Length: 224
Length: 243
Ligand code: B12
Image 1 (tube, each protein chain N blue to C red):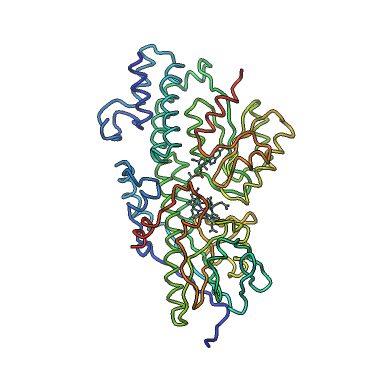
Image 2 (cartoon, chains in turn purple, yellow):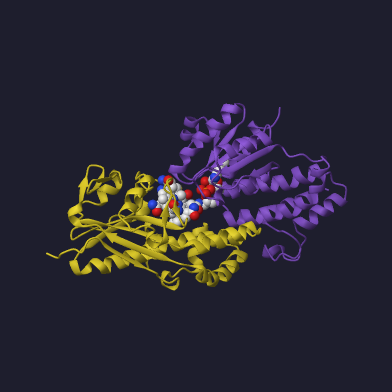
């Protein structure tokens, strides 16, 4: 049983999607995340173990290696693809409530800013850590953030911006959300953002990379 | 002394081929410098590059401000009544200038639409590669334009500084509003939003100092304070780039 979970974890880390996928070349012809997740469940491995002992561990290692600049965006995208292939088999268990997300993060690029990719990457890594991600897209107004928070009680909010001029809209967004929901935690990120800026605008956390966001979510935003 | 037609505004449509972007350059942009990119990524880049050239409207251009209009100030430049606050790092590179060329470059809107479509359809990888190539195109179009500026001012025996962009080295991004005020509306198809975001996204703006006594200073990355930037190059990498 441990063996199959280890293989599944490896598939996520290496971005091996399914048996047909030629990537990575040294795993050609081998079963991928798709087949192994299905097999593990059929063997009677608990869905929770498939998720937390294989997939999440795999994605976490990817996040750490990305932060250390050992791997780059395309490698993360391949890992996320493998993870998604495995998640298909876990979907029914989320539906039946047998599996639960660790929580929900509502994420978006702030008003006046159209940059999307950095935020998408963060979303993928966070999703791979067992959180549900609600992506509001780009150019998101404070009102739209607030509405999403109303719809997802107890969620965490993630804000992204790529220019110093749009970064200032993070402040209005944080104020807008916290005036109605003081307990909601807000994480911010993007190229020009700094720790100092996060403190100044009353955000709860800044991270330069996706993994830092995951660590904050897992340690500071889960119940108990 | 030469008389200046004022203002001198010139624009171009360079072809993708002229920008000489190949797979190695794209791989480097993605971060793969010490290790090669995975084979699947290299294959995809090879597939994408010919397609890219069909979805481009590369434009770039410059406007040379009348020299009487431009002087050095404490914090940068004074262009008529308009104070351009480049900050001390860039100002130190502009010493002795006669005037500046205000420039822009863009990869055009089609490429980013394609990238967004690919991602919306679930192909994040291809969408990301197209996006990354778009950034390189905007950058290379500016580099290509530098050569045109050089040719343009050569008859006056003028030299040029490096190019500098608002948003770098303490020069506020908002100063783009001032630079755009010197350019014709929607110059090269680029517009600037109130939050100083250029649309299309894959666009660049900036200035180049001109005059008989200016010099190309240290190369850009060495004066930039973004030490952790994944696109940062050292001097030898930069020299190879210039080929
Ligand atoms: C490539 C690039 C370009 C490309 C295209 C950019 C694009 N977005 O498409 C081109 C060459 C066109 C360009 C143009 C300009 N650029 Co530029 N560019 C960059 C560069 C080198 C990389 C950006 C990138 O693609 N990163 C890759 C993505 C995946 O990373 P990311 O979006 O940052 O996201 C990561 C993290 O930030 C984080 N993250 C992001 N969001 C969130 C959210 C949360 C909650 C968390 C936790 C984390 C997180 O996780 C992501 C994954 O690791 C950066 C410098 C840098 N190293 O970041 C400058 C940078 C973004 N550019 C900058 C500037 C100033 C400009 C220009 C204004 C210059 C000019 N005057 O022309 C223009 C603006 C263009 C426009 N449309 O208005 C500045 C912006 C800062 C500022 N001063 O406002 C930067 C930071 C460089 C600098 N000077 O420090 N640029």
